[in-house]
Amino acid sequence: MGVKRKFGALILTSVIVMSVVFWYEQQKPYSTEQVIDSLWDKYEVQSTQIGDTDPVISIDVYDKNDIPEVEKYLKAKLSKDDLEHYEIEVFSRWS
Image (cartoon, rainbow, N blue to C red; front, side):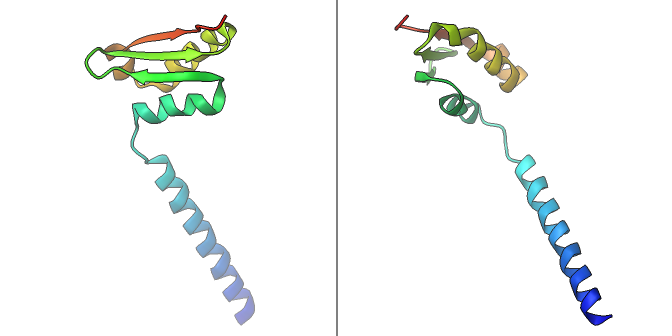
């Protein structure tokens, strides 16, 4: 019985630790910069810029066919406050 209890305690502890880690990951603060930086992993982006003085987010993509997808992605990922504050410009200088 001792081995079964120790094994059960180990499994229970593992589940609790994994739950805490998952909860912690979900609680990370929202960042506009993180959303913009995530574009580099998802699309072929040439440059990104968040305006300091002008409330504009500018995204330059290589393929003009990606423009609607990038706009849709940003509208889904950016907060409501960001969408109200920033003007979003997605463009392509290459095609």
